[in-house]
Image (cartoon, rainbow, N blue to C red; front, side):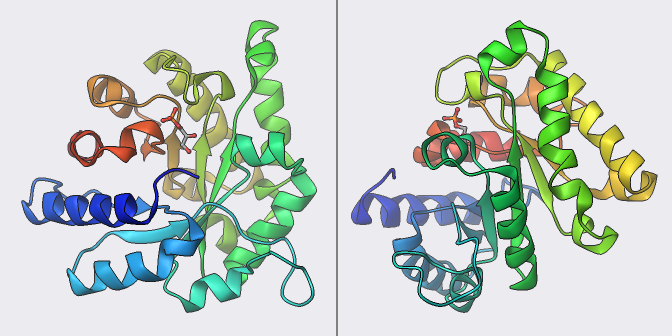
Length: 242
Ligand code: 13P
């Protein structure tokens, strides 16, 4: 629930400009504005001939019908949305979204040709009690690891340690790599090495221009899911260059 209308459109315009300067190399970039703005953002991006994809931060866990206030994956697809965040820790915490609900959302997103960005990550107390691997394993084994092979290949995973989101505290590159390697191993065990190598695993949690290089140079960190730093075009662009 960041950015108001003008701020959102200004941010998109600045990003499209930075992209036009041509120093993003071959990075794949998606932005996830508030759902209300997606149609305008999508039209702006098309008009600017930008390659930035547009996602949303949530979708309904039911297909269509009498679910007041909800937006279905298929409705979002119709207005140009390409991707959806599923199970961000704020959704899990403030809206009590269970792994069962998140699996339903993931399947509906895939059915509507949206790329699910499935978020997982442990709380601070899990990390302190060395339960972080068990927690993330459980979040994934009850959800995305039960998908078909083809659907797993279309899914992006984001590891976001809850203690690092919006706190300024970042997982060290070694902590991120350890968890990403575990996630890749879990995918290999549930599917095969080819799927494990192909699925993108992003790191989220206080990624900034000054720590992006160290995190993104880890072998199993394929990209970032950026919160605070994405609200400033210059910072977001610097991370994309990294
Ligand atoms: P921050 O980059 O602000 O820590 O947020 C990460 C995140 O949760 C992105 O969705």
